[in-house]
Amino acid sequence: MSSTKYILGLFDDPDVMMHGIDKLQKNSIPIYDVYTPMPIHGIEAKLGIKDSRLGYAAFLFGCLGGTTIFSLVYYFLVHDWPMNIGGKPYFAVPDFIPVTFEWSVLFASFGMAFTFFYSTHLFPGRAPRVMDLRATNDRFVIAIDAKGNIAHDDITNLLKEAGAVEIKHNDRKYVSYE
Image (cartoon, rainbow, N blue to C red; front, side):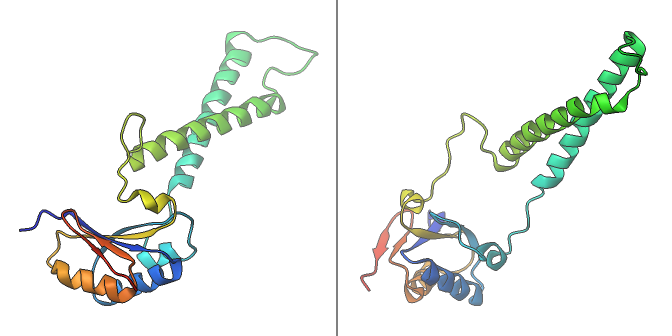
């Protein structure tokens, strides 16, 4: 059994990489992930990536923040220490709106940050896993999980046919000069 975890196909053009994704999917080869130095429109749909649920978390954290501060202000200004300011009633809702909005935004922003770090495992102190450093500069990388039942040579040949400039395994490296 091979010790190779991932097979990387490096492309220098996003259109050629998209063609490579089509070719791999047509041959039923599961793609682990794709790394690009810039956003490519339509790649999420092609890879079957679902929309993020981070917006739902933001809404829930915002509701939690708004409810928390509204309850605290209500308790402080109506029950604990009611003050008659300018003849207004104790429970003047328009006075609560600015601080409620600010706390909703504060809770939503911190909650989204913590939820994002938790869901992506990018919390502080963890070293990021980078498949190939050139994916942040000028290369488009398709990572294929090599633990499957497909022969590595078949995957290598498919990537070469798709136009990969370079193909990397853990233990060896193939370069095509086309």
